[in-house]
Length: 218
Image 1 (cartoon, rainbow, N blue to C red):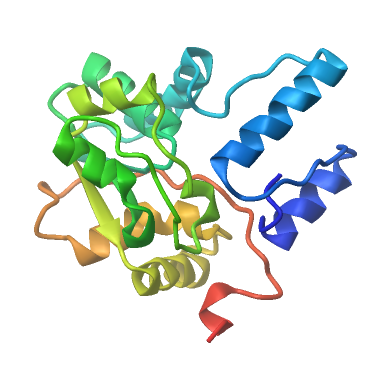
Image 2 (image 1 turned 180 degrees about the vertical axis):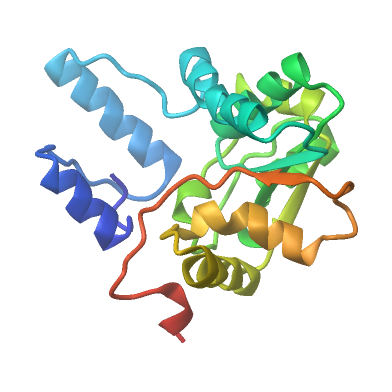
């Protein structure tokens, strides 16, 4: 785990009995530590997003959403490494191709937005966002799917992320983490870009520090 992972995530992983190896927060440091652990233990590495099995598994979120709420005009999902968004795009393109898929990411970690514009992966460097689950670059498996099937990537400010997170806590009584708030944050700030009147948001992630919500850190 990165040294700067939120304390609530560290505590949860430790609570499940895991042995945690902390690393610097850079992708290079994480990959080096991973290689060392695999070599030492013989463990099998399953990539958190750049793996077709993971993409297929995460595609079921959009599948369930479309089954429960027919006729959606747009579906918005958060994007970090792209596993959830690419899986969402595959489900929608296969089963409901008339529905637009949009990704949402922080302004301070907007590599997916820039990559989609450039037509190639633009690696994420020095991400600055409270949405720690989205501080990673797209993968070589996820990006081609996103480039082909996702209509746009919308970004949201840190203030908008916190507002969306707090609104969800207060109105829906759902405890979500900052990364999960991105679809709502993007929708609230980029309403002119999202078409239709039946919009689905994939809200994924509840690793929130209940003692220190981000809107109190000023």
